[in-house]
Amino acid sequence: MVKLRLKRCGRKQRAVYRIVAIDGRSRREGKDLCKMGFYDPINSQTYLNIPAILYFLEKGAQPTGTLFDIFKRAGVFYKFRKKFNY
Image 1 (cartoon, rainbow, N blue to C red):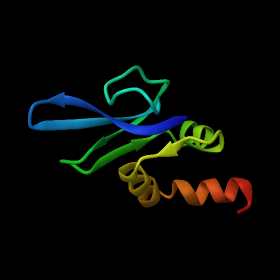
Image 2 (image 1 turned 120 degrees about the vertical axis):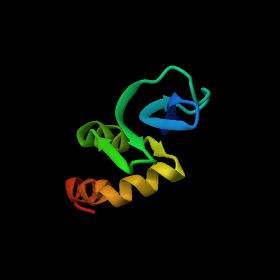
Image 3 (image 1 turned 30 degrees about the vertical axis):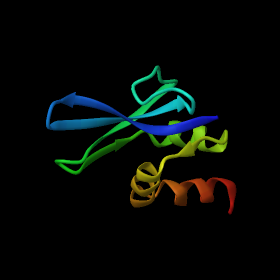
Image 4 (image 1 turned 180 degrees about the horizontal axis):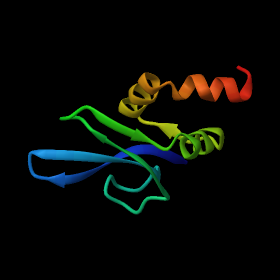
């Protein structure tokens, strides 16, 4: 199963996360299928590639809990419902 996950980047005490699609069985720093944005919790910056995220969600990818909250704040699920008339 494909998961949408945060992959840690940056230096010590200054974490920045990439939002990636990755196989559910691989580790956090494993090889990703696609990079879909980044999240900086210190500066509260988020960049999302919405078309790529919607593509993986419609294929059945499951976001982690933290990403679910980030997507909800950004309105990704509203666009997902609007696309499929839910």
